Length: 212
Image (cartoon, rainbow, N blue to C red; front, side, top):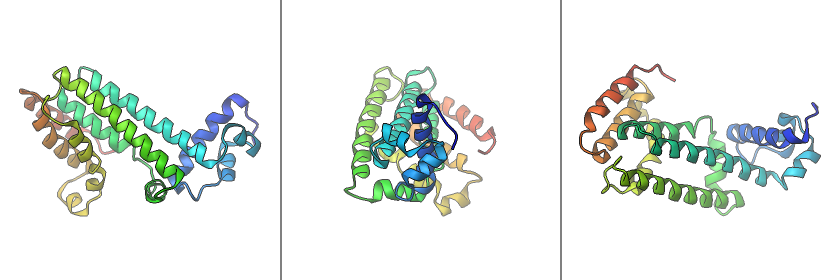
């Protein structure tokens, strides 16, 4: 096992936990798996984390905190309303990249478990924070002030499911086209007057981008 400094050990453990949890789920991954991946001893693991659940909490904290920072940047820069919505949905999709079905089932399906309750609390706090940022953008005239951001977040949570819909996939050449259509559908209703031309330009630009 490669020796690492105490300074690097916690970072390595967190990164290894992130990769393994995302790929195999929370339940299947053991402390031994994380230590082997990180190149860190079990003694070092328990120096930083009481158990696997505490490591998972740290991983979730890091991922969601990073997402909130990126969302705040989207809301506060001088981009158009339509482009902001494209970037917001891209951020939602980015956050789900490489997450296994096992991880989703372990986090959301194991009702009453410590990690499920933690995730529910973390998600509720995050949504509250993001809605507040959205309302701040509304107060600056970026979005229609009459639009309720709670609806937007409810809709965005269903976008990933729609992306995997086999019927929709047959109607579009690639997932990006589905995103463009969904975002434009929302944006025309919440953008201030005059933003429609910006939406058309954003759509054309997006369509020209290569598939991911």
